[in-house]
Amino acid sequence: MILKRTLENPLLRPNPANAWEALNVFNCAVVYENELFHMLYRAQGKDRVSSIGYAVSRDGVHFNRLQQPVLAPCDERDSLGVEDPRVTYLADERRFIMAYTAYSPQGITPYFAESRNLITWKRIGPLVTGEDNKDHVLFPQKINGRYVTFHRRVPDIGLAFSEDFENWTDFQSLVMPRPGNWDCKRVGAGGPPIETEQGWLCIYHGCDDDNVYRLGSFLLDLDDPGRVMARSKGFLIEPAESWELKGDVPKVVFSTANPVVDGKVYVYYGGADHVIGLATCTIDELMDFTLHG
Ligand code: BMA
Image (cartoon, rainbow, N blue to C red; front, top):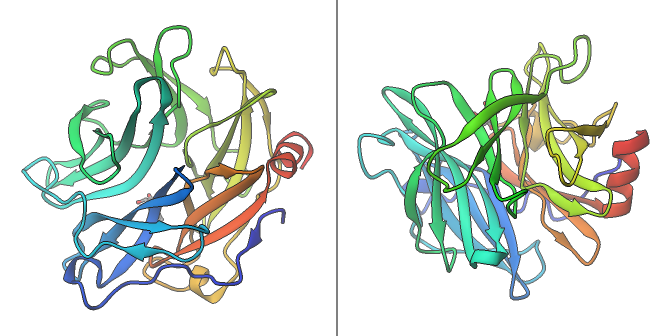
């Protein structure tokens, strides 16, 4: 397994002192900016409604949290929760884009929000409405004049494109489950794609028939992200620690963040939908595993 768990794991646990994060803290976005790791994490209270909290760290391991969520349900579109944030920095526009799942009695909707400071978030609209779609995450720059996002129409990872960030078109399937494999039932994107000379390096989750969630990786063409150039045969990590095997949902490692700092990939993930863990490798190791592992 190429990802090495950090000794301090789990990094974040539920906080009984705050009702909104008393039950679970798990899937999180992490952005490295101004020499700080900024974490936006999904938190659940005992009512199981999710909000998004903020925590910050100098070393990527020890985090201090705000006492209030930075994004919480606010109307009928998300009355049951805001879930699974993935944050991308659009450097050209100096704004952060959060992709998150809005949950309501009508179902789930993949939404976007924007921020200039990672604390104050403004909703800017859905990727698509009226369908079962989530696990979306924006690419960090336009490609051939268009924004590009991953999304998930069950069971595949897909792409969609937009010129104006409002109208999303050309929905297509890109990475599918592999029968008989660890990712045979469903797949979904992880954190934002990592730009390398060889292509967009991406981490994803795969689920098998026993609902075990593991992480794998693939590589996309830089100019034509609809072209898959490589995909890892094996997985990068699978549930093995007690806090990955047991929690709110058993046997889950689910990543929504993979910032790269000084050549090291920091893979943050929810452990059993209950706590937050970290595992790392070098970018070279991740590339090598994607191509050959
Ligand atoms: C997915 C999402 C995640 C969750 C995962 C494992 O479908 O709902 O929020 O972490 O399942 O339970």
